[in-house]
Amino acid sequence: MLILGSSSVKLNAQTLLTPQNLSRLNIAQDSLSTYSDSAITVKDDVERTAYNTMFIKKLISTLKTPHSFQFDFDSLAKNISFLKSPNQPFRIITWSLPFANGSYKFYGTIQMETKDGSLKLIPLNDDTENIIDDDHITNQKKWFGARYYEMIPVTYPGRSPYYILLGWKGNTDKTTKKVIEVLSFEKDQAIFGKNIFEIKKKTTNKNRVVFEYNKQNAMTLTFNKQANMIVFDHLAPYESNKEGNAEYYVSDSSFDGYSISYPKLYFKENVELRNDASSLDELYSPPRKATTLLPKGKH
Figure (spheres, rainbow, N blue to C red):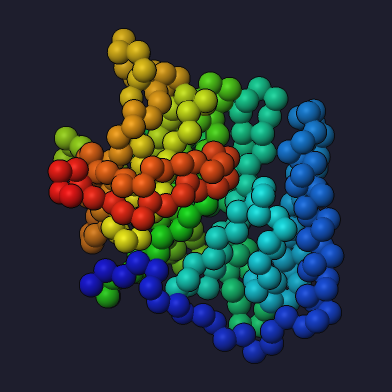
């Protein structure tokens, strides 16, 4: 039986956040918010990098507060994504740093919950510029960076769980990317990518799915729990002679999807959103989830 995020396994911490540590975290959150906002709003790349460096140092220092894992950092939600798994004691923290030329660098870390409240991190190193094939399975040292906005835990009896991540991956001044990533763990290693994605008209599965499209286009990529399916805009060139050039790819008002099953995700073409999907914020918010998802011709 396949289970998608329906169970909740939590570590019973012996000591919860004390009032003193809670106050400390709230104060630190204000400083973190200032650094994060400045890293986004200043126009000079050197200044942006400096503010981002200050943010990283302050974040690590703040997370050292005992049982910081229990603190949600809600004030940072505008720029920083905190995704906590409902069935494993970890959360993944990701964000992006924009540059004047339209490119981005991604930053992140995985925080593990510990019994004594001490800090355990798996830092993520964005190695996108050195990844020649975006279908390679990688680890935290060679991370295919993205800002994740949705996590879908997948468990199966007798098998190790894995986590499907939906993420935004700004690319250049002309195109944007989104990604369907898979996270799993082997001892103290974070493994990114898994050979579970069925691809149309191909017999070989893929390890991750990457979408690239015109920067002015808003693309829906979200999980519909009712249908147990990841649904996304079908992308196509708006000029017929531009096939293969991502700069000309936009949503064509149709939708495809991945039905989540075991041992792989099955590609479904031409699924229909009964409620129109909308991108609330292309940078960091997932589009509004449709309430009904049906195969075309089945309603």
